Image (tube, rainbow, N blue to C red; front, side, top):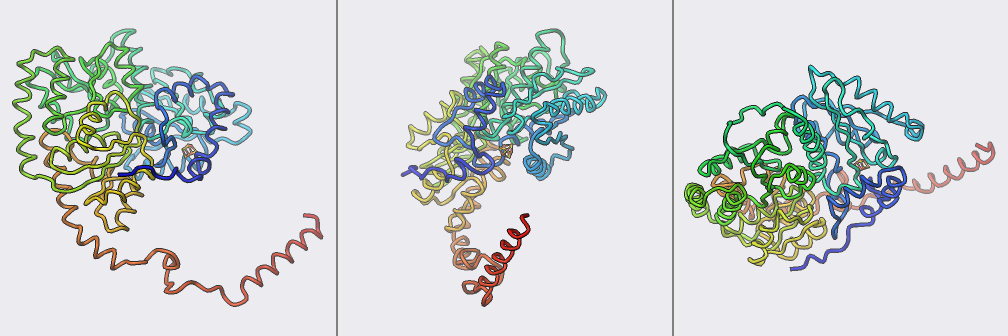
Length: 503
Ligand code: SF4
């Protein structure tokens, strides 16, 4: 199988909204953001593909803030970027206003923009409504050195978190979630070290806890909690948190579980709080057994309790896998960070998975999954580009392609059943028996439709391509007779007239 795809088009390397990455980075450093750029480059290392090929990365941070109770978010960036980000946030059901501090070249270069941001934060800091305000610098204010670190740390008890999330420093929106989650954990850790803090809601006092890291399907945390119970462990609040006080509960865990493996800044805070961090997750039989053992070791749980947990969790997973074996060749690609876990589950269920690509970087927390997959002949591509995902799909001709929107579109054009990873795979349980059952269900329903896809390809053959792309064209469109000549003469006359008046 070949993933030697051509490099991303020049428009992605040099143009589009990420245009002039090197120039932006140099400008940010010259404007005093050298420390920020060094940190971002260290936390989110580049790879064969180092540019966002999906949505604006800042959406990850925006989404994390918008999903938290009593947290307001203010964007500082170009109006077009803010338009796109707020549109997307409402498309995904934010139901919350996003603050915006506009700028022009004058307020940017004179430093007035920073004063405007500070005024907006002061005006928004209402302690009866908010626990925290998040301010996000997008590309241009970051490159211009707008110093969010000079904002007050809190106003009347409302915490102020300022972060830089430029597209030229954070490769994916997944990692941008970590930028904000890590900044919040850092702030909360400082508070917890300084004195007493609020308890999270629903805490079960007395039990050591495991803090999951990653945005999970809502049914997964209770399932993981049930798997942990025989070891005398409970579930701590998730990272990214849904409420400020949850941050203290997460940091107070016995073990942090990096279920999504790209939360580098968040893991740094857990480690600074003295918590061990375990990678991978409870997927399939092997994955669940190994994960329960790793958690048990990290939490100093007796071996008998780990065996009890395995004895309770594994039979249900085995039954779910045996009830719905998967007989299909599947390629997996996405930018959520859970791609390797999904691939493991598919392989255990009997699928042939020649390729898994993730836009996220390689980290130590996905090493167990990478080792397991590679031992079974799966090609694992970190920082995968769309071009590599496409090349792999065309090469192995899968029965089902799980991937990003453009990959799914290309697959369907070729008559290959395909599913959008984010909306279809990430929106279902992944862990334990529920995950095994759900995955088999998705694959079965889609691969059954293979014949329907071939019929669709022949039915729509040619529609929407070349001259068929316009409404109503059956043949190549013809210019109206004489149109080009008339336009050419009109342009010449206009140029002559402008020259005459010196406009
Ligand atoms: S903030 Fe940067 S990466 Fe995001 S849309 Fe604007 S220019 Fe593009």
